Image (tube, rainbow, N blue to C red; front, side, top):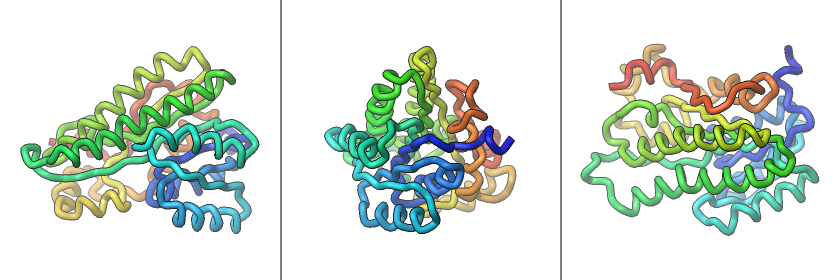
Length: 253
């Protein structure tokens, strides 16, 4: 059973890996045996995280990637493959930003920032990964969406719309790429304790009331589903959008 969730001989690229969920999942994948490539803009944080993983005996590398700057995407994959000496088997498509404000007050520049990162950027990164995976007829792409993209909630119009778009994009990608040997799925976290969670501090009491488990998620709560979708344990799962939310999707109003 342990081998079913193993990532040995696999190489995973994780975006948004300078902090939070991305950095945590990089560690989880490394402990499962994968060579991990941490990708983000803040290279000082990436380099520190890579050094920590190497000190623990893991194979880890770091690359610069800004999902809103198209020219950095292919360069990041090229650099990752050069460093690892192997192609990317797993893309953990995790970069994301959030902003909370009433619908009528959301400014154009904030709307653009959110969509450019959460949807357009995620799509462009996934395209680059898929093009490389198609030639080998093998690969796994995991898009990190949100429960906010599954149910309507106030003050998150741009964020919720971008994540709803990512969920639907996941299904289209899965449909097109499954026949080429590439599995595509999405994880839809609820309120997870992280830097992004801290940005919603004014709404935490209300969010907790809408969480049937009556606690916010921890980054570790994503370990199981992340390993499931990345490993052979999830080899027949295609086009799923899996909520990991303590029941928020059931209670969201």
